[in-house]
Length: 176
Ligand code: 5GP
Image 1 (cartoon, rainbow, N blue to C red):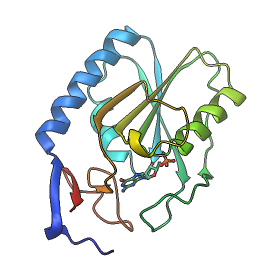
Image 2 (cartoon, rainbow, N blue to C red):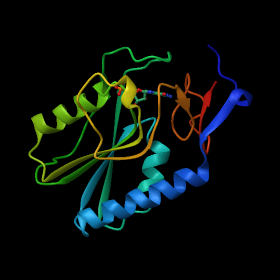
Image 3 (cartoon, rainbow, N blue to C red):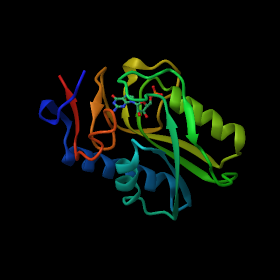
C-alpha cells in the first residue's frame, strides 16, 4: 500500500497532542518531585514526542538517545528487535524514563525493559509511550504513561513514519 498525504485522516490533532502531553507531564512532575531523571528517547519515532514532553518537565533531566528497529519499511513488525545503537551511560541508581512512540506487539518495549534491568539497578523505571495499540499486543507489557489508545490502524505523523516519510506532521493520521 502507498500512503499519500492527501489520503490521511486526522486521528489526533496538534491541539489534542499538546493538551495530552501537558497532562502527562503534570503527572510526571508530581511523581518525580524534582528528582533527576534520565529520559531515553527511542529513535527515530519518538523524537517529536521527546522534545515536546521534556520541555514540560521541571526536574533536572538528562537526555539519551537509542536506536532500535523492528519494522524496516513495511507496515507490520518483523517480530525481531534489532539494537541498532544502544550505548547508554551508567544508569545505576537513576530514575529512568523510556520515551517511545507506540507500543504495538510490545516486543520492543519488552526488549528494552529486559535490557535495562539486566544491565542496571535503577532507582525507578517508567515506560512512557505516545500511543498504546493494545489490540495487537503479543507480550504482557503495559506502558506506565501514555497519551492515546489506538485500535488496529497503521498511524503516521508526529514522529511516526511510513517508509521514512510523515514524521514531521504536527498531527497523527491514518489512511482509511
Ligand atoms: P512493537 O515492538 O511494540 O511491535 O512495535 C514498536 C515499533 O513499531 C514502534 O516503535 C514503531 O516504530 C512501530 N510501529 C508499530 N505500530 C505502528 C504504526 O501504527 N505506525 C507506525 N508508523 N509505526 C508503528
